[in-house]
Each structure stands twice: as structure tokens, then as C-alpha cells.
Length: 204
Length: 264
Image (cartoon, rainbow over all chains, first blue to last red; front, side):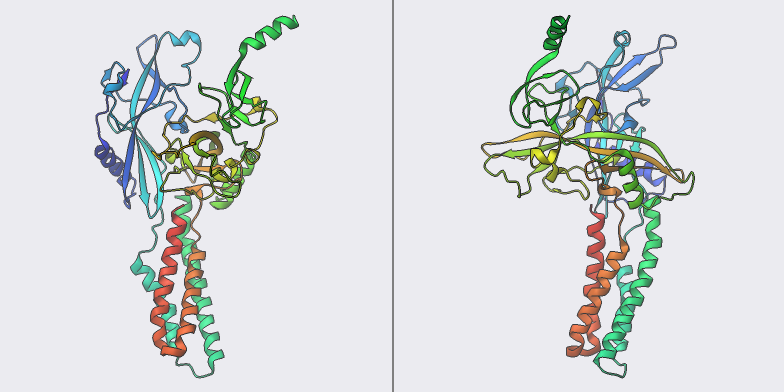
């Protein structure tokens, strides 16, 4: 069976952006994505008819192996119904013991794999292609790189101090030593500031 | 009895091709097998056209976790950091096998056959030939570099499905894309109740891509050295006005160093 995707790439990007905004992750750069049809074994329970979904292939992300999938418009699997830009992941793992195979049904479910670029760093997220509610991401709130303006202001301090040192009395050796001292002190202060700031990026 | 066992063993063996040495081989139908010709470990499941080789993992889970904790400066006080899950993944890559350009010293062309960005492994592609910390290219350049496992059946790893074609890049005449599997440790851990997913190279034990931290200190000192060098060089010529070009150079050095470190 094939679950038909209900949201396109733009819709998936919007849902991801809103999801991240609610978590105070607002500095998002370019968002792009690819559509995958992931194979799931749907095993229906004997009693109330509740279904469990088991991923039928290894895609490297354990969060996708057991999920509660939103209800979808299911059609018999037909390669013509698969969007040309989508990737169909074939099933490669069995549903479980042979007794469970009789009740298991293979469903290819759409998932968008979104990639977000932030200051050159790429991070990713899975988002279901039916309702956009199942979202698994690694996106964190990174300590933003200082803007060009902030960087310029920070670095103008040692530059101005060096310019002032040009009027110091004394020979060229005294002048060079003064400039080196300014660079060392300013470098140490800026390093300490940036290291403190960088911890936010490491631990989220 | 031994004859019956031999018949059963022969029935479970299969004739196939080693995609590492291109030799025709007869191996057992197991998840991981050793090529009797070249000795490389092969991924035995799911490939009809041949069995792709894998790079032998050398970094254990503990060593890779320590490397990640050191890189990210994870707090070591009790309860602050908890590992939820650690998985050894065999990630597929396409390796361009070009007999006319094969070289031990020249880097080869490797692109990803699966996208694991959500767990912290950005894909290699034509426009992104390197991910910091990921040593797949040098490790897969030659068979000896790939290493061999003494007991392939003891390997406990998840084989990630190959889902991406070789990036649309056409192989030249006589060249072909070959699948190889590369081991990484995928860690799911929690620091102060915040979840993190990061990947460590299981051969070199180096944190990969987004797992690497930005070293601001390097950027600051690059800026200071640029500032000092340009100012001292130009000051005898233009006096205090040398601070302006020196400031510009330091700004460029600072921004470029930070951006380069971020784009891992």
C-alpha cells in the first residue's frame, strides 16, 4: 500500500519552521528537502484494532523505527503514483516472527527529509508527509555567529588602541611591544567572551 | 553425519561476486562474510549483483564516546549527561572506481548513498566533497586501508539502506560506481534534559560534522595576528592610519575563520 502525501515541500518547510519557532529556534536559513516513502509494517492488534507500525528498512535513525503514524489516504502501491522526485525505500527487514507476518501489511509512508542551513552548518529533520505532525529533528539553538557589525565593533577596540599607541613616545621597539601587548590583552578578553558564549551552542 | 552437514553447508553457500576485488566467490548466506580471495568483510544481505565491502570499525563505543564528550566538553558531574542509545551504523557510500585514474596517493571520489542529516551526518555530494572528521575517502581508497575483521559474524552493526543514486554524476568510460559501507557510531544522549544526536567516525574516533565545536579562540587569535601584522607593516608608511586596513584584515580573518569552522 502507498500512503499519499498531503503536504508539499513548501508546506513541510512551513510546518518545520513553525515547530522550531515554538521552541525559540528562529534563526533559520535555507530550508530544503527530499520526499521519501519509508516502508512500514502495519500490525493490527487482535482486540480493538489498534495498529502498530514497524519500520521495514534501516534508515539510520532509531526514532523512525517505531512511530505512531497519522491516518492517511491509502492506495494500492503503484510506481506511477509515486512523485518522480520521491525516493521509495524498499522493505528489507521482516515484520517479525512468521506468525505475525500473516497480519502484517506493508505500507509506504511519505516522509520529508528537511535540511536547514545555519551559517554554513547543515542540520536535518524528518517530518511526515501527511499531516506534518511527526517531526524528528536535531536542530538546536546555536549561538549565532556575531554579525559583521558586531565583529567590526569588537575588533575596532584593539585597532583604535594600536592607532593611539602610534603617538606614544619611544622608539620602534617600544611601539611594537605596546602593539603586541594590546593584541595579547584584547585577544585574551575576546577569547574569554567567546568561549562563554560558545557553551550555549555545545549544550543547547 | 559429516557428509550430511557438508551437504547442508553447501546448500547454504551461494555463488556471488566480491565488489571489493571483483572476484567470483562462494560464501555462506550470512549478514557479514569474509571474502575468501581478498579478505575484506562483505555485507552479505540484500545485494543480488554482488556483495559490497565494508571498512572495518576500529574505534569501540567507549573510545568514540570519550572523543565526543571531550570535543563537546560535556559536563561530567553525575546525572548531567546520559547516553540514551549508541548504535554502530554501516553507512553506504558510492566510490568512483576508475581504473585509468586509480592511485594510492590521489584522493578518490566518494559520495553518500544515504542521507543521515537528522542524526548528524551531512551527506557527501559533488558540491560537498568533505565532511570534517569523516575519513571515508582515505579509508576506502585501497583494500588494505579498509582493514579486515577476524570474525565478521561477531560484528553487531545496523546496515543503512542505500537510497541515493551516485549524485547524478556520470562515470567516465571504464569507470563505475561501487558501493562501500563505512562505520560510524550514532549517539543519542541528553545533556541537562536536552536531547542531542551526534555521530563519531568509528575508524578514527573523530566526531563528525555538526558534532565538532566552533573554536572561537582560533578565530580571535587569527584576527589579532592579522591586525598586529598589517598594522606593524604599514605604520611606518602611513602612520596611525594603518589601523584602518589592519582592522579590515582582522575582521575578514575573524569572519572567515568562524564561517569555515561552522561549515563542517
